[in-house]
Each structure stands twice: as structure tokens, then as C-alpha cells.
Length: 100
Length: 150
Image 1 (cartoon, rainbow over the protein chains, first blue to last red):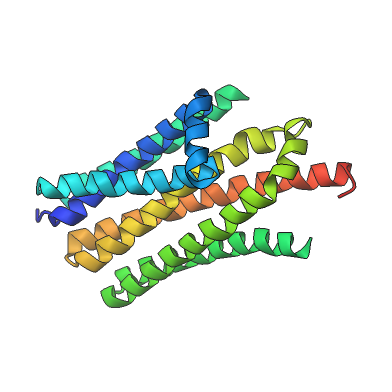
Image 2 (cartoon, helix red, strand yellow):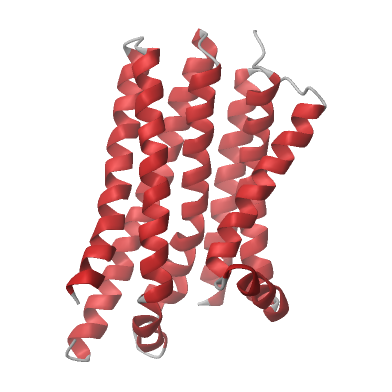
């Protein structure tokens, strides 16, 4: 099967990784007042900083993978994107359910 | 009050419009109109970007007042579960749509287009989840405003 270009492959993996990083930032923010304050100090609100940080991490992970010329097949790309997104959502949902 | 209402409704409208554009992106891919699908995917990313700006502004500027009331009420779940989850899962919807747009602009073979359709469905599913959670937040806000005569 034909592989995706390095940039597309890198972005697919970083999209999946970002799903999990998103959940990690959520949990860190809620568990560590210091981290939440640090995020809030960047833009004035933790939510806005969270979004910008995630966007930045998404780009950094993709940039590093692209430098390594990573190339994967569309099927692997789908697995990265789907599972990263699903695991990220589940972690957030379970975390807030446990906090109810 | 009208400005607050407009801000709140506008981010919901933008999010729903993005879902519609994602759906027609899938239709365009299925019909083999790759060029058109690129435009639709790009529009959905722009709409979601605007949605985050409008929704974010409402969330930061106006929501805290209602949130403080919600948190001490019997409908605190509206904030503590539904809002907390949706405000963060939204970031993933935006990143998925950006990835979809870049994927369509850079690849055009059959397998890549199949991947694009799947990613578009995943983006829609995640966006619908955020939307449904938003309705629960809305319900909590309506209940608290009804109680406090807002």
C-alpha cells in the first residue's frame, strides 16, 4: 500500500498524540493549582493558554517527526488519529465523572 | 443581554455550520470532487476557528457569573461534567479539522481519500458530542436562570 507523505504522516501521528496530550493537560491543570496559574498567566485565562499550548505541541510533534522523514500507510494513520482521539476523550470523560 | 445571547448562539451556529461543511466534504470526496472537498474542509476549519474565538470570548467574559451560581446549585453537574468536558474536547475537534484540511490538500490517491472520509466522520462525531454536551450546559443555565429570575 502506498505510504502518505512525511508531512501528512507526521501530522496524523501528532493529531493522535495531541488527543492524549489534551487529556494530560486537563488532568494536570485540575490537579495542580500552580500549573493552572502558570497557564492563566500566559494569556490571562487557562483555557486560552491550554488551546494555544496544544496547538503548539501538535505542530512541534509533527515538525520533529517530519524531520525524521516518518512515512506511514493510510491505515496506520487512521489508527493513530482515531485511537488518540478516542482515548483522549475517554480520559477526560472518566476524569470528570470521577470528580462528580 | 442581547449581546451575550448573540455571542452564545453564534458559536453554536458556527459549530453546526462546520458540521454541515464536514458532511458535504464527505459527499464531495465520494463523488470524486477532490478540489471542491478541499474548499469545504478549509471552510469547516475556518468556521471552527471562529467558533473557538466567539465561544472562547463568551466562556471567558460572560460564563463565570453563571458558573458560580451553577457550581453551588443542585445542577452543578452542568458545569462540573458537561462544560468541563466539552470545553476541552473541543480542541480536538479543531485539530482534527485542521488535519483533515491538510490531508486533502496534500494527498489525492484513493487510500488517502478514504482516510479523509474517515477523519471527517470522526470530526463530525466528536463535534456532535461537544454539541450535545453543550445542550446539557444550556439546560443547567436555563434552570439556574429560572430559579434566580434571570
